[in-house]
Length: 127
Ligand code: 5GP
Image (tube, rainbow, N blue to C red; front, side):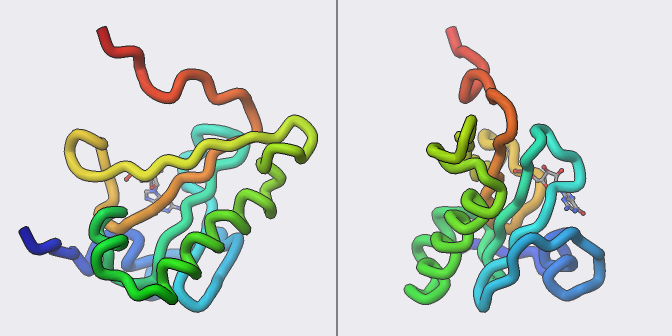
């Protein structure tokens, strides 16, 4: 099934400069900015600048240069926010929600970088 990208999604609008954001990192192929509704002391979103709806779309269709840039951008955000293991009480969680089951709100690939507190269980326990 082909991936369908909605160019009016909120992150596409941020990339076009139509909506302000608090940028942490800007690279040739990626942008990192603070989440508008933070769920932890550190809550940064890292997005590719290209039109990819989710991680499996990105991994299938992005160029090697985009994939390398994005991967390095996520790591750089971990370092910039001092959430890497080894930085004092550091530690972090990376989340990328996709589709209905993943409860994805914005249909443009993003990785949440969360940290700054003990984050608890990864997901609600399922019995
Ligand atoms: P999702 O549920 O799609 O994984 O997460 C989308 C995230 O985008 C949410 O954490 C939400 O708070 C964030 N978000 C939605 N609209 C905006 C916005 O206009 N600016 C910023 N910085 N974050 C947004």
